[in-house]
Length: 298
Length: 310
Image 1: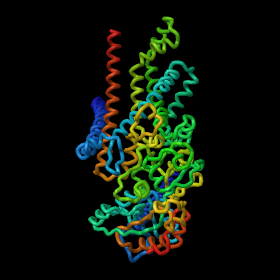
Image 2: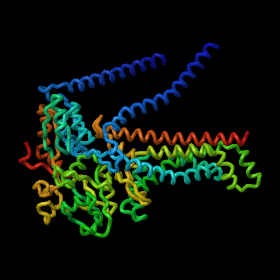
Image 3: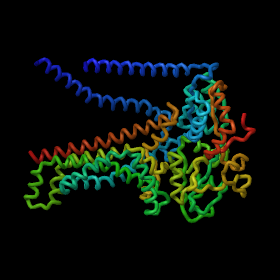
Image 4: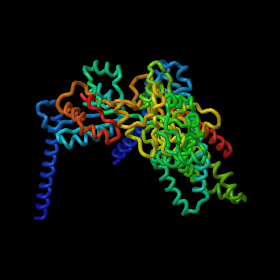
């Protein structure tokens, strides 16, 4: 009996190990492939062309600045929209809502997470785009703002479910202690529960940002895809072109190994780096938070 | 007793499944065999692979469907992907017929020759690019110069071309579309090869023809362009005049394309890897026939005129 148990143990441990290491391997391979296909662009395309403000690949104009700023504009605005809504919903579900509302709300948020982004894009084109054009009196509804609203909608379920899990793991004793000290419900939520779940909430936000950054289809359908350099506050109400939409719409017909192909991969590398930076910030902030908490507790 | 019944039943089932399997295998066998070149036996089923331009894909599908009712032994598979995709596949010898909304480029021709091919060009239909605006917009005609200036970003308000005081929102297809390149060369650059002007940066690049129609239908500020076959009654076509006769405005239609009075029109092509033979030759000949060209008309494209048929 004993050796059999041993074998099973070793087998399962090694399978789990392979699973764990394989994700490192995959990320590594993806990175190697991206670098191999994209880095030659830095050599073949003059830097002055790359860091230009005009993107028109069929005439050899590969200015990626409008694409970078387009992505940043849409992602940051989407985060600003999704953050209060997402965390607010999570707090409501976890702390405030009576049990029966909670049981309805949670599955609905999960359904929202499951809606394919292309469907949201369709709704965007047919409903949100015309609505914003009339309501905000814009030349066209195909703007960065429309994209940000849709992306916010896509990021909210991610933020809600992760943040809500984080709030749930806060021991009930914390809340009871807060209330026992005479704090109101709101004071307890804001002063005790949310700070205690800070790390998890931050992870939720970062995952939400990552979701918004990488989203392609919905953005391509509603932002108008004009590679204009965003300038001034009004830029949010003008069309933009994001990095993901550029790759998606142009990769299909580009000749393998051409300059255009290399530059598209370079954009892929930049997206990779952006999400890496977001992850590093997230983990740096959360470890810092933990250290502080440990210091206080000890 | 019951037990043996079950067993015999199982055996019967087994034999039945075996028979089915054999049937499947033999069927696959004949199909695979027909793929080999066999010019003298045209009665056997033949497979034609047709790929390329998204502009042509609906037309090619309609042709393929009709042709298969006439000649059930010929199977035609039609896929889109764009003119470039189709011609690349032709060079790679993976299709029998490539559809293109532009002529083959010199590089593509060189690549084909290097691969030992001798691509043959067939003009199969004509297509007009209609300039479309919202029906609420009072403007109904533009000169080519005005249209070019709008897309260059020099005219930004409808009142400059006789319309209301509204900003102009320019819509275009993505840069990988053959229609985009054609519009760039014919309208923005006035067919002048030395002209290097490009679309104004704030031109909206929409991923599909339907996207352009949807925005124009809804937005009175918008101007867009699309193949005549895609234009619906919910948008308004603009009459365009040429550089030579700026006072004569022409609305795109089958008649004005056929007599070349409408400027922004182009040929649609099919390419074969070599001089076509057998079923492929028969298919292309049928495409030139009156019956097939009627389908061209039904789908909103312009049939080729008699003397252009070869």
